[in-house]
Image (cartoon, rainbow, N blue to C red; front, side, top):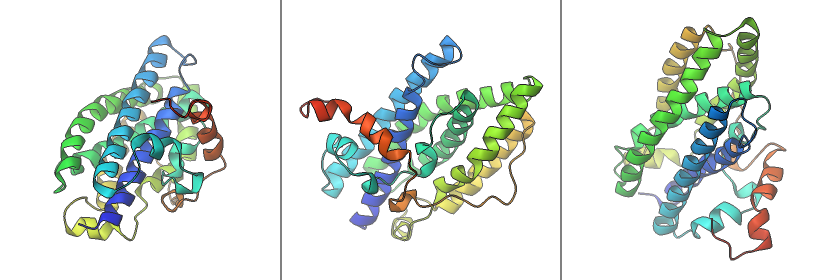
Amino acid sequence: MDTNALKNYLLRTADDQLIIAHRHSEWTGFGPLLEEDIAFSSIAQDKLGHAQALYNIAHEHCALPNADTLAFRRNEKDFLCCQFVELPNGEYDFSLIRHFLFDAAEYFRFSALSESTFEPLAKLAVKIRGEIKYHLYHGRTWVVQLGANGTDESRVRMQTALNYAWPFALGMFEQMATDSLLETSEVIVSEEILKKQWLEFVKGVFDEAGLKIPENSTPVFGGRGGFHTEYLQPLLSEMTEVIDIDPSAEW
């Protein structure tokens, strides 16, 4: 197994979890309903735990720094998250659409990783998949509720959010050159396989919700190579405020 390929995969997967966790946590105290305030806060906590566990594997098996250093002491260009997770929350409709699309992708990702030949990742993936199952149920329920069972305004808002989110969502499946080395040894499956599974699933949900997937969208790539939106650096600056003040603090 190629260590550099594994390092790249673990970091980008963990970075996605870390950044979306921070975005979800921004709804704490601001959710449209108390239940949603609690739900997004709980999901954020889970995502943070997923990131930490993935960073720990990278530390133990790829000779990388510890989880705290990887999360809080890297420069913007060193992060490998997709641009989708960096985008500001905006209104609740966008955050909900992103939550659903992201967790649908992650459910298929960690389902595949649960059968990985790399045992530490396979064991972790089983646990993560179980938690993401409930995240996905939450997102799917609200997408259908606000689409099929909502008002005219809620349907328009959800469709507008989907139109904006879709090219960025496709960017989750950015294939890296080193991935083939891990695919050959059956550590991971290809991004193309995951995208196909994801597309079939989300299309079914959007059909049920009365929402239409945009056609001929160009995926927004770049994040996996360290090219990010203008929104990531401010997020990182906010995320590292405590450790900048007290470097000995633990997350």
